[in-house]
Image (cartoon, rainbow, N blue to C red; front, side):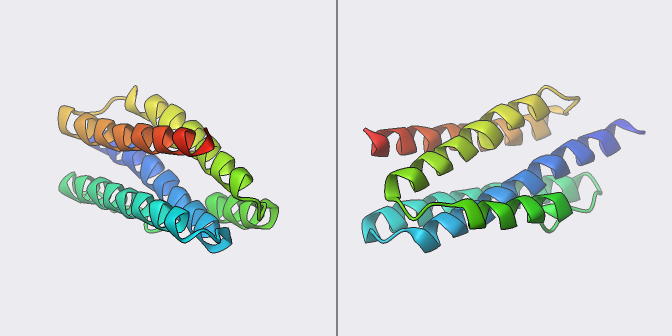
Length: 143
């Protein structure tokens, strides 16, 4: 596999995960009653969608085809997530935080350790930093 192909695959893995994040936030938003909280989650979701666009554009710049969904296993996970999600506001915030921590930060950091070119690495770092900000916002909501 050429190095560009490896980078494209790594970025697509991250992109599928980003789509999972967008879908999970949809679930959270649907279950939230508090308007202010709902708006906070919507603005986070807008940023996650922008991250997906940045990743997709980078994949195209590398002559790759960006993933357009979270993939089959992601869809299954999403379906189960929606079934299991509590109606309780604190539980929803904790669930969102867990997702951002596990996937948005830790998993993304693993991908970033891969063989990425400088520009791809910069974009991945941007994505991780926005996820760190979201995690911090969610932590503050729980205090």
